Image: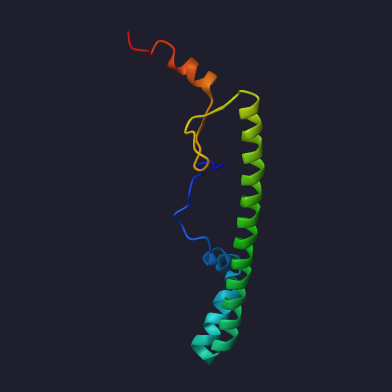
Length: 112
């Protein structure tokens, strides 16, 4: 069973958020690079940000997959109760309609 979901076109790793959250350290370490040539400390900080951001993205993806599976099961229960109808007849990429809702919206819209 497949549910259509909004697909993000933005990057999944928001390192800029990490840098904003640690702005003081970020600028302090950039100044250390500029004045003392201390690239190592800045790179350690930057790579820690990549690790924290990547770990957060994996956690978010895991939570979304779990949510998707739970909701897919609930939609199947709605189909069994006759609340929604599967309209494609396919095993994958299924589309469901809430027929009674659509019937009300379509009242008076049928061709004569």
